[in-house]
Length: 294
Image 1 (cartoon, rainbow, N blue to C red):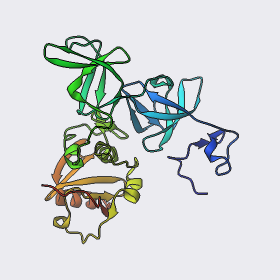
Image 2 (image 1 turned 60 degrees about the horizontal axis):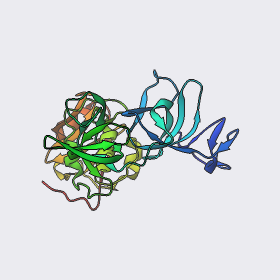
Image 3 (image 1 turned 45 degrees about the horizontal axis):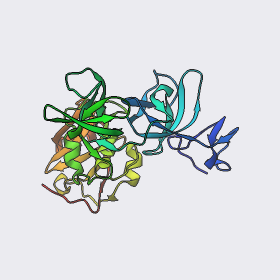
């Protein structure tokens, strides 16, 4: 069996019981479900902070846990996309309540109480999930009372299950100016594939984490002749190790290390610049039912 290290929940001494007979390990156990209670939890290939970031889990998301070591690292699999790695065990809770709402704004705050003048308990980012136990109004502003004793602004939330926005390009465009962060998955810092995954998640479309996975699975291939003018809004342009979104005529929207930010730049110029470094466009893909607006 061919396995992908990124999504195979196993290591030589331990594996998910569902993989028994498929991968070799000293023992197999059933993972436990845990919820992220930190603002963000970095996922790393190895249990050490000097190891590069592979991805991030957002507050309220769930992971499956196989092991926690004496150094405080948990061996986990992200429920969002199946990505496997290590994150600090202190970021997890096995008893946190089921979320009721999701943060719809790029960034917000959980305050220490229901007053915007009170100290911030922790930041919240778009896609984070929270459990609301009640609502109060102070000076014409509604606050959601969260089960952990904090409060946030009600207008920055939407109930889980509520109608989703339909324009992922507009979602991604709101990230323009966000700093580039390798492995980043939030509006505090994001990389190219993280931007694609986050924008699609906001319209209810699940996508894998990395560019090669997205190139294989997101949308359908487009028979492209190399002419930037032939691309449509919402098309995904792939290079080896990079992806961008066509935001409009001759516009490429992407998080990238050249600008160290999420930007919209001329599509033709970006293709020429990246190709000049020996990295040509490898494919273009398109969501078949996505309305090419604007």
